[in-house]
Amino acid sequence: ITKTLDENGKLVYQSSGVEIDYDTDVIAHRNQIKEHIMTYGAVWGSMSGNMYDPETGNIFYDQTNSSYYMGDPDFASSINYGGHAITIVGWDDSYDKFEAQTLKPEHTGAWIILQSYGTEEFDNGYMYVSYDDVKIDEVLCGLKNITEVDYDYIYQNDKLGMIDILGYPSGSRVRTEFTKQSNKEEIINEIGLYSYFEQTATIYYQDSTGMNELVADAEVYPGYNTIEVTTPQTINEDT
Image 1: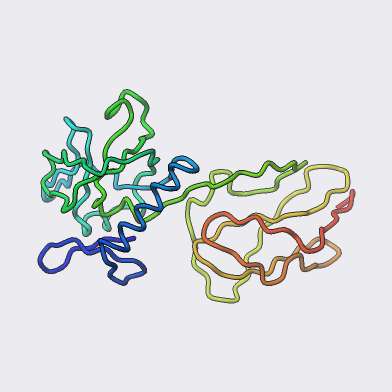
Image 2: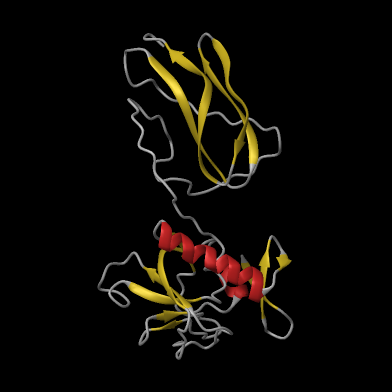
């Protein structure tokens, strides 16, 4: 969900660029987040890390109440995408202590978030972020389950996860190269990859003997994908 201001300065909630209804669509979206927290645990999100706008003087953070409201979509969009990563751990539907902020949220209620600066900052590491904050609903991620796997080796270039993206036209090919870690036979059973949107991908394996198709037209979804190889690929001892 993204948020903009209309010509009268009123907050407009949108999904995929289309305005959505606050009382039905937005509340339903919010309830999904709450249900996830109650059932599975915390939700990862992002917010603007700016406490004020040095040009306009607008204040976004209330130090006394440890509350935050970024109410300026133009300023929020001018800074780095995503801003600052946080963890949503709870909520208070009646929270309204946004006294120091220059701009005020239209609706009561706030997410309770855990910051990453330790217990010395904010309210023992926590703060309240208004439901109306223009960044808090843009990027959300939650885990429903974790499956333990037993790999002998994991070959990867992205140990920090997906930290940036590059755009390619449909049908483009991307190659990544690894050096075999052992002197024994290995088998490729699964392929992991990130995606920013839903698409399909055909994955190949190539060595000095040629190229083999591992997976054809795999369904890839936003986030991290683990794709099972249709026919496991054997890597010989001397490869």
